[in-house]
Image 1 (cartoon, rainbow, N blue to C red):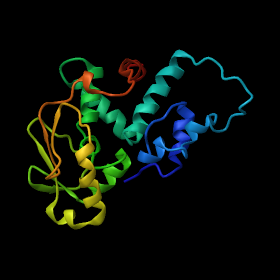
Image 2 (image 1 turned 60 degrees about the vertical axis):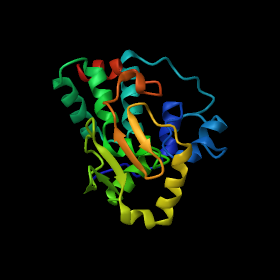
Image 3 (image 1 turned 120 degrees about the vertical axis):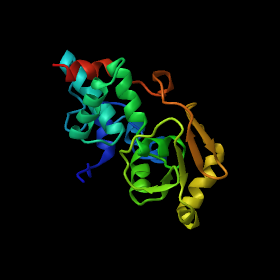
Image 4 (image 1 turned 90 degrees about the vertical axis):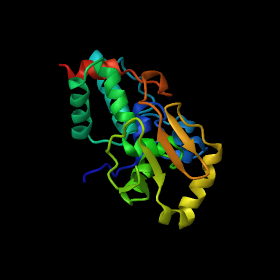
Length: 209
């Protein structure tokens, strides 16, 4: 499957804000955003021009797509699915993104970034409702149970991640049993559960053109 393999810190610099793509590194002094480095490919002495309406919409779309680690085709398909659902398209879109299995693993605290969560899922370290799963894009439903596979708990890396669950803060739509490394989807995520700036209407306007 195709995926972005370039430098991820460059993406944060291009957007002008932290996208939390490298986990703990994003909170350290090594993060380029803490050094106030300018956007890549631009002379820092040149004043940035005002973005057009289309530029703002495209920037928002790219920001969210990069945060969730998705390529354009997959991102667009998710939007089209949200458009076919009853209700508000923007809110449906956010809900579908949050319901991805790799995002749920990240939200339950078993990974420092969504990229790491995606890798853990691909390596089949988790079960969904008791069955082994290795597809990051699977959408969870209310009542679903996500757990670390028993054999994976023997791994030193997985053990360290499980120990960190004790201090993890999870969104209210997830019920976490830190000791057993099990999370239950109590309810589907709502718009108020998003803990970062997200202007979904700009994405709706962009894809509606």
